[in-house]
Amino acid sequence: MTIQDAKFLMSNSRVEECPAPTLPEYAFIGRSNVGKSSLINMLTNHKGLAKTSSSPGKTQLINHFLINGNWYLVDLPGYGYAKISKDARAKWARMINFYLRRRENLTCVFVLIDSRHQPQAVDLEFMEQLGSEGIPFVMVFTKADKQSGSRTSQHVVQYLETMSKSWDELPRHFVTSAEEKTGRDEVLDFIAEINQQ
Ligand code: GDP
Image: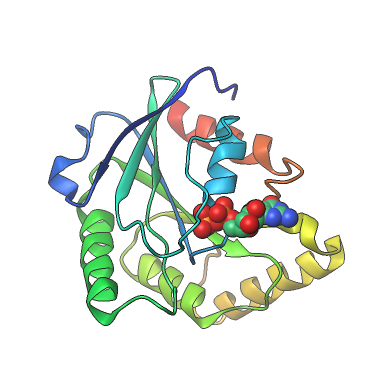
């Protein structure tokens, strides 16, 4: 897919106020600092579209972008930021759960995972929740340029092996680097494929 046009539409804390659910929607989420903004900017070829985090865990809004006039890309607030207050964490959980369950045009969730680490409980738990609620998702391993390809593969395999203990079917996964633009075509072609169905 070629990105002809990418524009920011709006930020909301309430699902009811999000744009009318008339277009397929793809949501991006992960631990804070996972590289979500960098990935969104890389995918859309738009340097400042998603704001790279100067203060992680601060933005607690659902951010909608309109891509090529025919699908929504959604930047969701990250999880797993240690310094966030209990109240803010509970508020995040309420908003995200509501969004994930109620957003009728949500087509696929992209769960971003830092490829530098072995399986992390917070990521596994989040995907477990998505799976148990039947919310379609894929995994995107980020920052692959930060270590050797074999180390990245090792972490990917560890994730898949851990997940295969509780799941019959494993989610699709992508390996990306915002720095080197790795995985861009694969992710965009995947979205194009679904949009055509
Ligand atoms: P967010 O909090 O998930 O939106 O993460 P950001 O996109 O702000 O990235 C967090 C940090 O990781 C920043 O310092 C980025 O420059 C860096 N980063 C993000 N993606 C990559 C990548 O693919 N490769 C490298 N080397 N650094 C990255």
